Length: 137
Image (tube, rainbow, N blue to C red; front, side, top):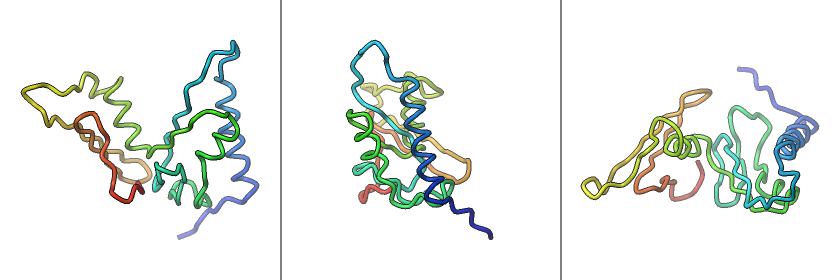
């Protein structure tokens, strides 16, 4: 199996493209931005915002994405596993929209499966996405 690792220059270019996309939607009227949320492929550490070694981003090993973006934009940055962020989006606007705890169903759960380059799952219960104890997803 061939591995297509990206060079340091390509890594830098990708980081610059991410920052450029954020700048393109940044408010120009001085409106306050509360923070930036990033959906990234795992495994990653949501507590530190480090993208560990995603199989679909070869060469991205231990990239401190949160710190890079916080330094560039001076707002809090939250990095989440793409499957978990997709599960939250589905409950906010998608197929699981309207998912709410009901008095008769206190343990209502939404399960999200993500099948693209890899298979990932998320469990959302009691309005929380459940993470692994070690935090790497």
